[in-house]
Image 1: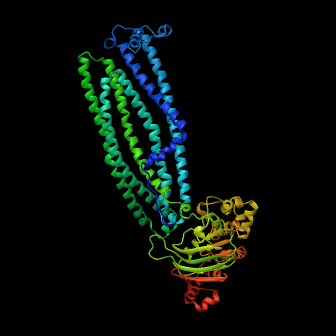
Image 2: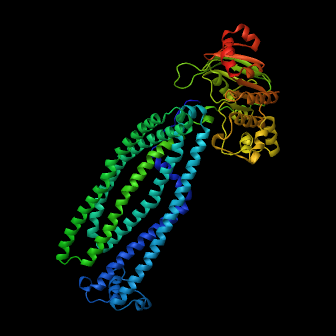
Image 3: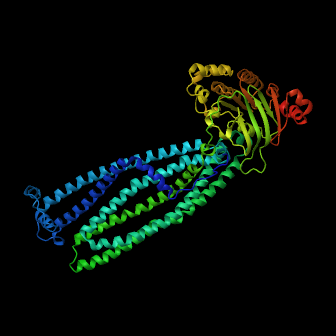
Length: 623
C-alpha cells in the first residue's frame, strides 16, 4: 500500500489518442465545428474558381474566346452529365457584358470571404471550447486519483512531479487537442477542398500532388517521434526544477540565514542545464522538418511548371486554368506546412499524456485494501499483534515485531530516540500504511479487513507540522466536519484555548489564514489543529509531537485542553516534552522498532536505563 507507483497497471498504447476520446463527450459541438471548417474551406475554393472566371473575362484570349459570361455558363452546364439547363430567370440575372460579370463575381467573392471568415471563427471558437472542457475533466480525474493514492506513494514519491503532471502536462494535452481539432482540421479541410478544386480545373496536374503527399507524411511522422522522446525528457527535468524551486522558496528563511544562495543557485543550474540538454535534443528534428517539406514542395511545383509549359505550348492547356490549378495546389501544399507544427504539438502532448497516464496507472488505496468490515465506534481496545513495517527501499524495519495493547480510554505516551519507530507505529492505526507482517486490530477487527472510512471517521490526528489551508479560521477548524454549525466551531475553539487570540484577529473566526498558516505563531496553529480535532469528536486521538515546537505557556494550555478533551477517548501520544509524557496513564519506550519497556514515569525511571537517559536529556530539554 505504501510503495510509490507500486503495482502499476498495464500502460495503454497511443496514450494521447486515448485521452482524446474525452472530446467525444461533446460530439454535437465537434460535428458543428467540423461543418464550419468545411464551410470556410469551401468558401476559399469557390473564391479561387471565381478568380479563374475573372481572368477569363479580363483576358478572353487565354480563355474561351468570344463567349459572354452567360454563354460561358451555358457551355459549362452543357458539359455536365445530363446537360442540365438553368431557368430563364437565372440566366437573365447573369450580366451579358464582361465588366458587369466581373463586378458581380467580385461582389460574390466578398460575400464568400465574409462567410468563410465567420465560419472559421466559429470553428475555432467551438474547437477551443470543447478542448478546454475536456482537459478540465481529465485534470479533475487525475486530481481525484491522486487523492485516492496511498500516503506512502505520495510521501516517498516526488510530490512536485505530480503537481507538474497535474498542471503543466494537462496544459500540454490541451495544446495537443487544440492542434488536432482546430489547426489540423482547418488545414486538412482546406487542403482537401483545394485539391478537389485543382482536380476540377485540371486533374493531370493534381495527380502529382497525390503521389508526393505520402512522402511528406512519412517525413513528418519520423521527425515527430524523435521530438516526442526529447520533449518527454525535458518535461521530467522541468518537474525536477519545480521541486527544487518550491523547496527553496518554502525554506527561504533558512537559505537566507545560512547564506546558501550560491549553493542553491548551483543546484538549480545543474538541473536547468539537464533540461536544456533534453530540449536541444529535439532541435535538429524541429529545425529540419520545415525546410525539408518546403524543398520537396518547390521541387514538385517546379516539375508541375515544366509539365504545364509543355502542355500550354502544345495548346493542350489553358493558361488561366493552369494558373488556377497551380494556385489551388499551392494552397493545398501550403496547408501541409502547418501540419508539421501540429504533429510536433501532438508529439509533445503524447509525452505529457504518458506522464499523466502513469499517475492514473498507480493503484489507488481502495484497491490495495479491499476490506468491507464496518468498525463501530471504538470502545474496547487497540491491539498491535506482532506488527512489523518496512518502508519501500529500506533495509531495516521501522517497526519490528511490535506487541502492544491499548485499552479504550487510556492515554499512552510513546517515547524513544529518533528513528525508533514511534510515528511509524501510530501511522498504522488510521491505516496510512499496512503492516508488512502482523495485525493491527481495533475492537477485534483486523484493519486489513476493515472499511477504511469507518476507521478514519473516528480518528483525529494533531501533528508537529500543522497543516492549515487557504481560507478562514472557521473553515480550517471545520475542515474535519464541514457540516458543523457556527456555534459548534466556536465551542471547539474555546475548548482548545484558541478563542482568545481568534477574537483578537480582524474578523475573528472569519479572519483569513495566510498561506500554510505562516501568519500565525506555532502555538496558535497548534490550537487551531486541536480545535479541529475536538470538533471531529473522535474515539481515538493521535498526538504526534504536537507540542515539540511551541513555547511553555502554549504547551501548558494545549496540555490542559487535551487532558479535558481526552476523557472517554483513547489518546496515543508521541512526545519529547516531559510534562506531556508524565500526564499519560502509561508510557511505552521504543528503540529500533521494538518495545523496550512500559510503565509509569516513576517505574521507568527506576528500571529502564533508556528511559532514564531520555528523561534526563531529551525529555528534560524539551521541558
